[in-house]
Length: 68
Image 1 (cartoon, rainbow, N blue to C red):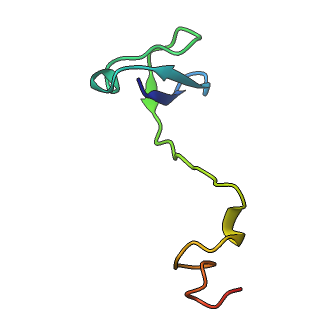
Image 2 (image 1 turned 90 degrees about the vertical axis):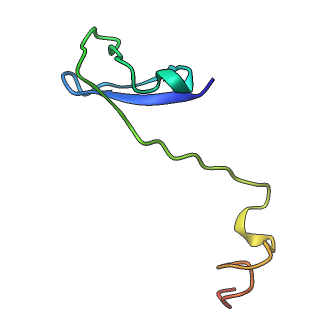
């Protein structure tokens, strides 16, 4: 089940909630009990061991642009 991030428009609290994808846009109440809540757009990031210094097969810092 995915985790969604929300922000309360009344108390400005940001919180996460695990919900089914079908329930992502249904009404949510913040931990403070307020009902004016917006779902945020979260960005997922993944890192691999070694970071950008390992050859990645192209793209910037992968050898194709000459930035090394």
